[in-house]
Image 1 (tube, rainbow, N blue to C red):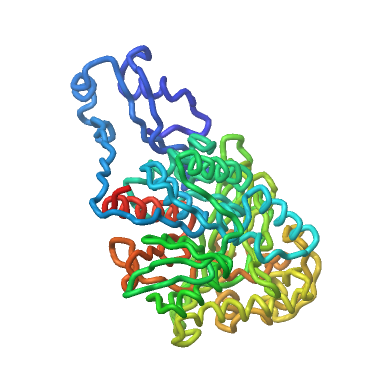
Image 2: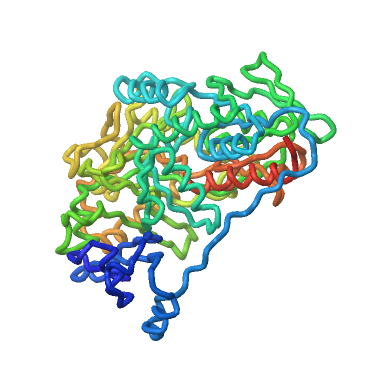
Length: 525
């Protein structure tokens, strides 16, 4: 059902009219999906999919609307009944990492009585929030607790997007869990749902408490520093180098920045392979520039959200692609380092997305061929440019910043900016060409004019770019079978974004949920 931007928003009355029924015949209306259609800027509208319960026989309604292909009987989906397997566990499952994958895996196991023990290398979300705020204010970096490590994972300090290309029937179950933990109910139906970092922190804390209430345990500052493997099967973990925990099963939801853990796992011959990722910069614009480009004369309308965009440029002669990534309407650019001596950028926004500034990563694809045949070569590739950015920024976690005009002209030093830089603890005018690979520089220089043709003002000379964005995805994949278990180590389950099987909050959460269900179907409590 299409509803004009200025149309009546009483969904029950609109549904009754569409079904040619009196309002009292409509018993309940549930929004299944709500999307914004802004293709015609002079006629922006919302498109709804609705489940409607009525008091009259459904055959009567369908007969009256037999020529309306958009009205049909709803198919009720029944949840799968999960039957535990017959294999007996000697020890309770271990979950390593409390990001989206680890949280959903641990919660699902706890709900079925498996009493998981969760080991998180960082701190709880309350302490972590304080540590991150201190870093952004003072530049005092904490290796244990930062934007990458700690309860909630990297997504806790992000835009909180819940979009995914994964088509999984359990998606609604994950969204229900988030809503029950405090997320706004709209995430269950809106086309591009997001939570915002402010709401995510409370949700993360709520889910942790659920895990504990159901018999699980959660330990912080508990870093897995070694694993024990006997006859091709995991038999135990070492925590903080001095504590041994025996186990039958371990779900490793380590996140895409756990470089020391990747190195340890590789040294223990866990099957891994290098995979593609992307690196680049963050670009910022006034939000109203993006709104006007996407909404035209309707920009600023109270019913419209802060606009986003998705841009792609293909260089046919080189095979490189530049694209926008993790676009944050009404957000800010944040410091996201996880190692001493490296500068990393990311984007973040609050639920209201009302900062007045948009930002997005502009990145270029990197393939294993760019960094050699070493499985861990991608990590060193990322680290190299993060350390160069640290040097270019003054070696105090300030970030190098350059205007688009200077970048395209091959010079540096301009300090007249279209928007005030949002990155903290600070920025310094520098040459981003000094902390990016040549092929990234060349591809971005070709892409920016193309993006400007799509969004007028996108590449204006005083637009600002901050470097470097390197953590777009995991640089390795921990190889697993269809049952979520490692191909060469029984009982070892690599899951989520850090394992190379997800890309964002929602897909990681789904991966964690599905991995837990796979374990439940094989093992009994």
